[in-house]
Length: 154
Image 1 (cartoon, rainbow, N blue to C red):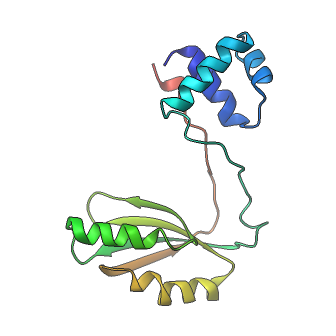
Image 2 (tube, rainbow, N blue to C red):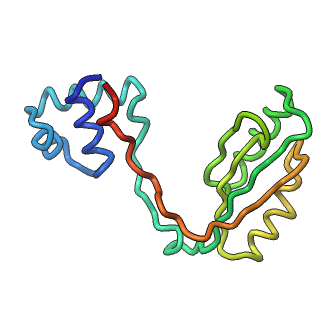
């Protein structure tokens, strides 16, 4: 990946709806080389997709929590069972496996506190292998979906 590829990625992180013509102009390339580079970035897996970024509050998700999960066992079978089950809970918008304790961190969105309580009691606490859930409420999101600092890659 060279500086031109990083420019392409920076522009697309800023505006994923850029036309190939506008993108080529912004990175100072002609159309064909820009298109080839873009396709190569997509095919190599550097670019994994394009999507709209939504405002959760405007969509009705006014409640957000971070939930830490500790499993009873951390063997391959328990981890797989938990990971397969959590994929089916749409209110869980981010799941990260952690080193140490706890085992997972999840971001959960719901319309309000009662909806979160119901989700917590009926689904999250019933996930396979869960020993303990610890929740903290999100007061305010300060940084969200920040672009990757491409200028720091050499």
